[in-house]
Length: 340
Ligand SMILES: [Zn+2]
Image 1 (tube, rainbow, N blue to C red):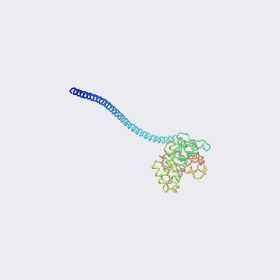
Image 2: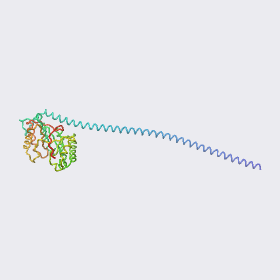
Image 3: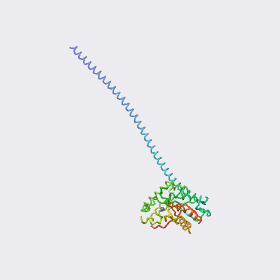
Image 4: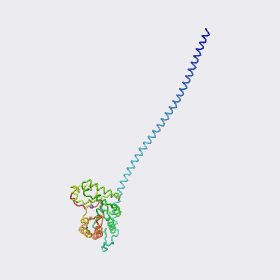
């Protein structure tokens, strides 16, 4: 009996020992797992710290890039302002050059010889277009056309400068030659269509701007002198808009333009076949008793007799004591009375 009890006791002890050993082993294993997990956690924490450092580094770079960007933007703005300023200076210098060019041309007239030797000109009456005490402004409207180079040739021969009030013709590029040879380019009209331009102020101003842009695109200079189609005294405009010339003469002056009519009419546009002798006589008679004249002529395509008359006109006026000058916005006078 006692032996059985011993055996049972031993068995219980053995079971207890085994259970203890097993749980000891399990605890050991778990604690090993825990330390593994802890190790992994440490590693993960380290990675997080590293990533955080990286993030803050990137943030700094981003901030740096942002401020760099703003700096570049402000540099860009400054450069743009500088560019605008230079552009303005450029425009004003161009204007100055134009004025100086006109001055130079006027003084050049004093030194160059002026007698022309072609068939139509008389050599007994040498022309000196710069010495006269009286002033003549020769003006040509409605060009340029193929008449223009012929006129330029004559003007060059006499060393006389003139003013061209231009429209948008298919030969508009001749204004470059005229300008380069020292003549003045004035604005006449883009369309020269009375019904269109005289219907209201904005239609007129739009047309004027168009011819101004065209001229600028060819010679690189803004013209500030102009002539109304039909002159400021025209009555035709009344048909399209009452009072328009009263408004326009005010408007263009406010916009900085000087407009010019004329006080001597060659009447080369008056009748379709004005003979050249009639044109010469009209001008010379028209100049009688005047110290300052602005002569209206046309270099429209059909005006061959104007070309023919020009040498006699220059000679005749020079013989009457006129010198020839360019119209500029500084010149005053030559305004007809407004009739509409
Ligand atoms: Zn005209």
